[in-house]
Image (tube, rainbow, N blue to C red; front, top):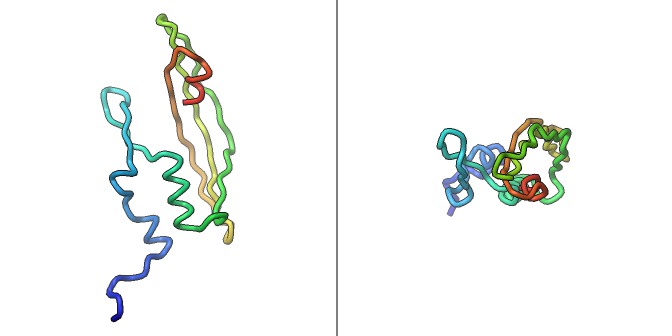
Length: 113
């Protein structure tokens, strides 16, 4: 018997919504919830779409935008990074930027989060 489902193409795979279990949330500004996917999930998704060694990630720039110690002795750090993901076979790439922040009493821990 022939399958009635269309084959999964890379375009269709990447356009699909992630499984709810793969999306995490964290507190954001103004009491909002921010949704994100972990780096492990992103790596798994790219490997499934393009195959192991079928893509590459290059951090083009990373800048610490904030490094402030508050009156409670906690360090507030914020970073902005520009990254490029390249499809190895075609050379097609997507470049974008993102940000992250953390607060910790230990500066190294704040920077590593």
